[in-house]
Length: 617
Image (cartoon, rainbow, N blue to C red; front, side, top):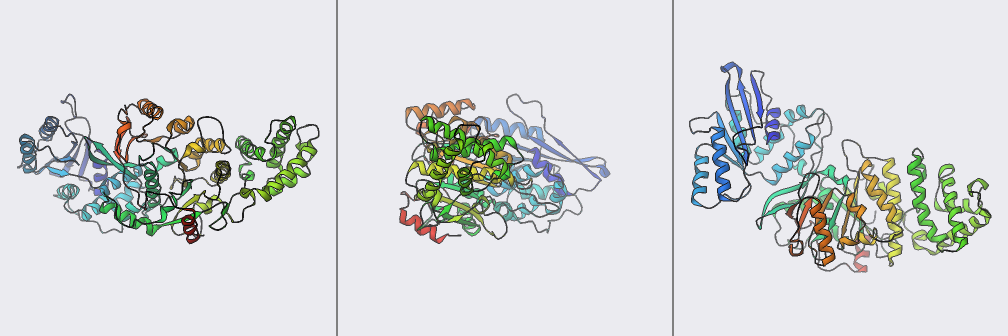
C-alpha cells in the first residue's frame, strides 16, 4: 500500500506548492492495523489545507473480522459524505460476506464516498513490476514521463484505481491524462519500456491463492527469482508437468528463453496450441496463449536420432573460457574426467586406476596449455608430453591405449559420433543476432534409449552451459539469460549414488545463479532427488504425493519453511504449496493450465520426429 502511494506521488508531477507525506503507523488497534497507509497532500498556498488518501487491504472472509477492520478503517480515515478531502480505499479481491450486518456496513462505506479497488491481474502485474524497478536510477523521471498507473486507469475506466486518480486530480492544476507512448501490453509481454534506460517489468503468473476452498489473489514469481532456481516436488497426476510447462511459457512471455529436457515425450508439445480450450480456461489465458505462440519459437532437438533434428554437443567443456579462474578450471577438469573415465577406464583393475590418474593429469595439462576439442585431446593422449603424465610409470603407453579407446568410442558411441548440428548454448537459447522470437529448445531424448546415454548427454549439456554462461553472464538490465528445465530430475541427480551428470548439474545449481542461468527441477519421487538440489532452489512447489515415504519428505520440507502440509496426500490436481523468498510460510495456490496443449498420453517417436523436422533451425 505504501508503494502505491509512493508511485502515485512520483507519477503526479505535483507543483512545488503542494507537499506530500506518506504515513504507515496507525496506533490504536490491537490485533490488526486500522489502515495500511495514508497519503497526505498539503496545499501550502491554501493555509496548509490537506487532502487524505487512506488505503487498507481487507481480505478476511470472516464476517466479524471484516466488520471490525472496515469499521476501524472508517474511523481512522475520518471519512464523511460532506468531506471531499478525505477518501478511504478498501482493496479487496473476494466477495463481501453476505450477512445483513456486513452488507449494511459495506453499503454505508460506499455511500460515504469510499472506493472499492479490486485490482485486476494486469494491475497487479504492473504494480509488482514497478516495485522491482523503483530502486533503479532514472525511475522517477521515467514514471513521471510514461505514467503507467494513469494509462492503466484509462484502460480500466471503471476500476477503483481510475476513481482514485480522478479524486487526486481534483483541485490540482495541470493534471490531465497522459498521452505518452507507454503501452500496458508491453508489461504483459515482458518487454522493456524505452526511456533513458531499459526497464524490465517483471512477474510470472503461477496461480491464485487457494483460501477456504476458493481462489483468491493472483500469485506472481518475480523474474529475478528464477536464477535462484525452482524445484517442483509432486507425485504422478498432480499437475507437476503442466506447472513446469506454464513456468517456461510465462518466462517466454517475458522474453526469457529455455532449454527443456524431455525424457518422456510429453514436453515436445510446447509448440502445439490447444485444439479446444480446457476446462477453467479464462480470457486472460486465451490472450496469453495467442501472445505465446506469436512471440515464441519452439525448436525440437533429437540427439542420437538422425531422422529428426539431431544435435551434437562437445563432450569437453570450453576450457579456454575458464582460463582466468583456476578454481573453476579445476572443477571443469574434474567434470570432464568423470565423463571420460567411463569411456577409457571404467573398470577397477590396477591398470584402470593408473589410467584414471594419467587421464586426470593429461586433462589438466591439456586444459591449461592447449585446450581444444575431444578429437584434439585424443591426439594429445596418443603423443603425451612427458610433463603431462604425473610421473606415472608407463604413462605414455597408458595414454596411447586411452587414445585408441577414445577414438573407437567416437566411431561407435552415438553421443560422440552422431551427425547433426553442433550447437552452442547461445544457439539453444536463441541469443545473438538473427534471432527474432524467444526460443524454447526442447531436447527430446527418444534417440538415446538407455538412461546412461541420456545422463551422458545431459552431462555434456551442463558442462557446455556452465562454460558459456560464465563467459556470457547476464547484463544488469536483464538478470535472467535463460532457463534449463529438467522433468523427472531424480534420474539425473538421484539422492543415492552417482550418475555421469550428477556433479555437473550440482555445480550448475550452486554456481549458475551468479551468471544469470535459472534451473527448474521437477520430480514425482521427492525422496529420490539429491537434497542439495532442493537446498539450492529458493522457490519450491509441493504438490500431491501418495506414498508414505514421499508424504513424509514433503511434509518435512513444508514444516522446515513454517507450514504444515497435512493435506498433501489429498491436494487436488494443480494445487501446490508454494514457498519462496517472499512467501513464508508456504501458501497454497491453484496453478493454471499450461498455454500449450497437454494431452493425456505422450507423443510417439514418429510424432516427435515430425515435430522436430518442422522446427529445424
